Image (cartoon, rainbow, N blue to C red; front, side):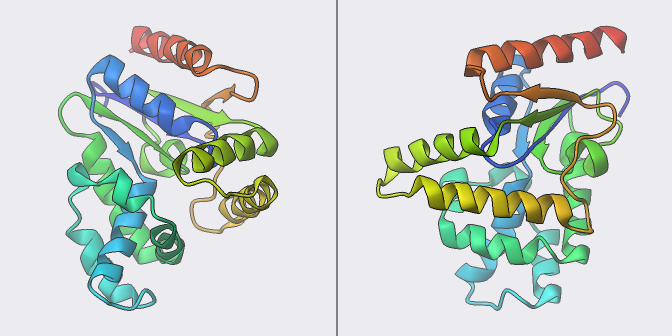
Amino acid sequence: MTNLLIIAIDGPAASGKGTLARRLAEHYGLPHLDTGLTYRAVGYALLQSGLPLDREELAEIVAENLDLGSLDREILSAHEVGEAASKIAVMSTVRKILVEQQRKFAAQGEGAVLDGRDIGTVVCPQATVKLYITASPETRARRRHREVDEKSGGSSYEQILADIIKRDERDMGRADSPLKPATDAHLIDTSEMSIETAFETALRFVEAAISEQ
């Protein structure tokens, strides 16, 4: 993996890591993987087949046969798919299978950009550069509220904020691959940043890491 350009991006929900990951992937001409979608894809496949979400052996089969290059963000963003994914994400054997799949994705071609919650710590600890993107819960709730309102309207800021805080606690407190910055990750707080400023900040860290290779 030493000659590959692997950019690992972690951070909580609505921190802006996905937007940054897509921008960086486009800038460097690399494939991008939102690893959260891999858990959603397993949940979605089980839902589509009418199979139970609590049968780990079934989820394992789906995970092993997942095509990471054809994940449909639009379909997988549905609320019920997210609920299914939260049940899949606690299955340790499924996590191991998906982590292996994610590593293979990262090792292809000239490298890749991966974003999620355990990329720098678990999936790609030898990544060229690691970024940890964060923002205050209130900022993230405002962003998510605006996003939901633009799509369908009728969302509650207070409910979204409560959900974000609850999700942070769950992600940071879980025993298996908790959300935390890698010790050598560059921290970017996007609370007061525009997308452009955040991108330029991330770009500087990536360029510095490339020059050190």
